[in-house]
Length: 215
Image 1 (cartoon, rainbow, N blue to C red):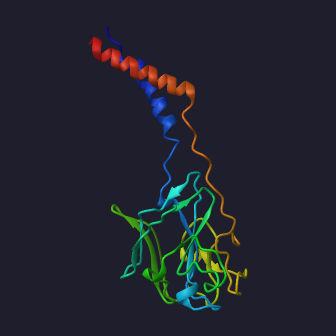
Image 2 (image 1 turned 180 degrees about the vertical axis):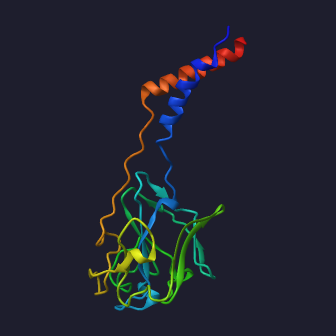
Image 3 (image 1 turned 45 degrees about the horizontal axis):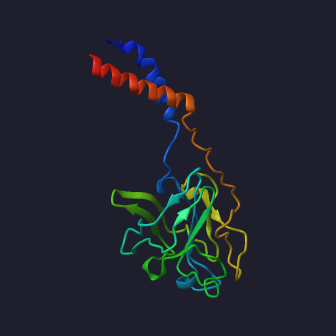
């Protein structure tokens, strides 16, 4: 018994086209939304921080990734709890997680002395064994004294960052861990493969297997 290819091609094309609407969110989908490289209320060694935002509809795990710059700063992210950024959440990396010395904000992860943010030019790079996944390079003139640089669009061009005007903690300007002057939104949820299409795919798989056995 034989089945002609024209019976399967349109149906299979429909199923494959339909299923490509889903995606797997990765670190590359995150946005670096704020950078505080030069706090004024406390020292740089205590008060530096930067913030990520997850605009996708899926949680993203940072555990095991490498945070570095283009020079010698480098550490592997590791936590006994977790390093997951849920959909629509902000995540703050900081030199110090101690609110009594860091300028009065709550950090999600402290990188300590293994990483720092220069006041002239520097890089924030996330990578794994496959290479760089997320990166922001800034140069002279980007850093503001006593204020974070906030991303004001979904595009991480340096021209889209501006100095924050909202005070936190001990008086520096920024919105660590919360929305700033720009309201970021999350992506719509991936469309799941519907039951009827799944049944169709299962049926096609069975027919293809049946055809192979009977040719």
